[in-house]
Length: 167
Image (cartoon, rainbow, N blue to C red):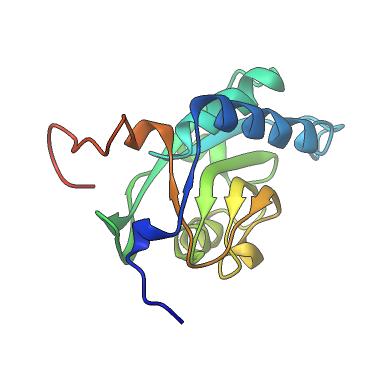
């Protein structure tokens, strides 16, 4: 087996592709909410879950949208997940009727933490890796554990370092 850096087995996702895949996620979730098929709210996990959460909320006509911020990466190294911003507590309760959306589940540590906080929420991601799949209720595309996904918000013709920070 050849040792590779994380970016050497890359899956590049374009804006068109993330839009198509997030719409496919919405179609899969349509009518699956606990309130006669409806969802009370969408909560996007920042930062990667914001784009798919917006697309899902638009497609399913869900007007209540909030965020939860969980930091679990420092550049391309995974660290222990920690919540840095929580959604409105009166909205969330135990998560019943709440659709929590992220771009990707990798190890599952982020979703594991959020699931402990909102055990009755429905967890949906666009992409899933094998280690994290048990934490997801609905996803669209599975990729191998050793694949690094390059999302369009991270890319230009070449990688572009953010103005501030490294992750």
